[in-house]
Amino acid sequence: MLLQGGLLSISASTVSFYYFSVFVAGILLAWRFHSSRILFALLSLFLAHRAVEFFSVGRAAAAGPGHIALEAVAFLLPLNFVAFSLMAERGLALPSIASRLALLFFESVFVAVLCRPGTATGPSFLNSDFIGRNPSHWILSPIVLLAFLVAFGILLSRFLFYRKPLESGLLWSLAATLTALEAGGVGRIAGAYVATAGLILVSSIIENSYFLAYHDELTSLQGRRAFNETLPHLEEPYAVAVVDVDHFKRFNDTYGHDTGDQVLRMVASRLSSVTGGGRAFRIGGEEFSILFEGKSPKEALPHLDQLRITIEESVFHVRGVQERRRHPSDPSRINGERRGASRDRLQRSADQGDANRGSSDRRSSDRRSASRRRAVRATGMNLRDEDYRVGVTVSIGVAGPGAKTRNVEQVIQAADKALYRAKQVGRNRVEVASPARASRSAKSSVA
Image (tube, rainbow, N blue to C red; front, side, top):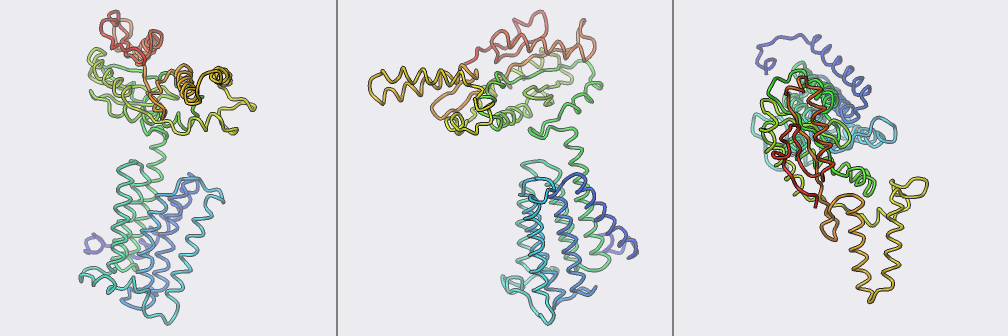
């Protein structure tokens, strides 16, 4: 806007230096950090702008190959940004980037064919008359503007849902790209906007690296590094709570690591909504911590117990349990034998006993009941009905500074000991590290 209004004067050589510096640095950074989505977004943006400048011969055109190129790349760019956002990040190995290279190649051929010498108009769907004429202040056709609008909606939804820097970078970069194309796509002003769009993508790489350094990638909670850097700044009063998922290892071994990851994400989502101003962190594995600044353990206790109840009442659905137990490629097998081999022997024993029972319906019903009981004993989880809806519980230990816990390391150790007591006396409870913990602890037996 400053360039268009004449409030900021920048020479063409400065814009050119800015432009190429951004794309060279961005491509190198994306390659270094194995960010294939940002790499291909940068390449797509660069190739699109160079195509418009090539077919426009350096001048904005209202018709002919230059205008066709402008409309074509303006239609394809938002679709590319959405595609790159939806694609999973799989690094820069050739098999994983082959499809994206093919996409850019075929799009380049498509634009070149549309803008071949002697072409006066492009495809009918890119013409203004296809769905009505543009208002006088819009250069791009309505169908192109519609493509941008849809892309904005998708990218905004993904950013609000995932809260990831890369989604935000794609969204704001696309907005800058639209401004560049509406400026004619060529010249000093358009070049500055395209370079800014590239700079936004480069910034998202840096921001994403910071995010990964201080946040847990699986759960999006703040990680151990953020936790350790927060501790020295705590001022009394404060409370430190240590949260551990009950029987998580057995659950993980029984149902597989993918299901275990889903359980951790579910628990983390409940922890992120803890009341009382608590800040949740994932320390590692199934262990989490919550910091309450300005609250004593006694003041934090009701919020922690409400959190415990919320997790206990959340139902987690386990899919494909029977298939997972029988499949020969089960990841929980070791040297051809599943870790739960003893449970298999119990299953076979129960099945043999069932063979002596009455009707086939009765035998089938008894086998299902026995299977559910064995799963409960094996995992410590409550399989609530035949569709394997699993109830997950957590144990919590909480402590604060006191006469014997003056520094934060001692507070954390006291919280760990309180967590250990919660595990010993039945799990699914909150234990406070204080002499009067028995009267103030929130107690609940495991279902």
